[in-house]
Image (cartoon, rainbow, N blue to C red; front, side, top):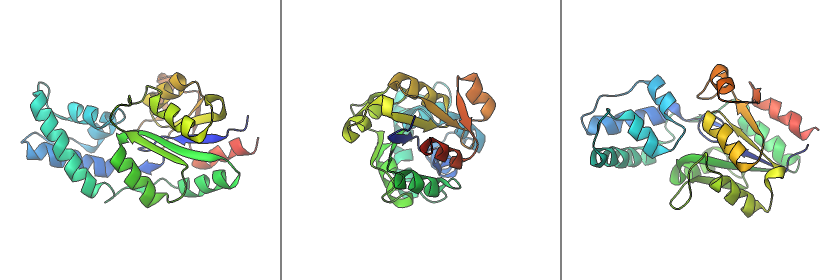
Length: 216
C-alpha cells in the first residue's frame, strides 16, 4: 500500500535530542539540590512527555511541589538550550524531501512540549512538514491517539492512509491505538531487542528504507 502521510515521532526518530535533554534535566535537578542523572538514565526516562521525564529523574519520594519546581526549571532552561547539541539523524532531511517530492505528506506527533516541537521542526526541517503537534493542554499524550487523530483531521486523511514511525514502545502503542501500522527505528533511544520485546513489527536500521514505501 502506498501511504498518503508519514507521521513521525521527534525525539530519537528524526532528531537526536538526548544531550540537550540530559543537560536541561541536570540543570533543573541541580537547582533544587537533587543528584544529577547519567546520560543513559535520561535516555530511559524519555518518551512519555516532560512531566513524566521529571518524575522519573527526581529522587523517589519527592514532593509534588518539588517536582513541579524542577519541571518549571527544566522548561525555562530547555526553552533556551533545546537546540545547543541537537541534530537530525543522518539522511532524515533527504528522506523527508524525497517523500514529499513523491507527493505524500509528512507530519510530526510528539510527547515533547509543543513549544519545543515547533521550534525544533522550524529550525531543523523548514517546510518539510505539513503538520506538527507536541504536548499541549487539553489533548491526551501518546499512546492515546488524540494528537495523531488531530493531525489526520487537519490533513483530511484517515488512519488507513497513514503510517507511524517511531523509536519506542510508546510509539508502537500509539500506532496501534490510532489504527495504523508502525515502523520502528533502531537508531533512536531504544534498541532492537527492546522494540521486539514490546511488540514491534517492522524495524528499520536506516531512514532510507522508508523510501521503499513510496515505490510500492
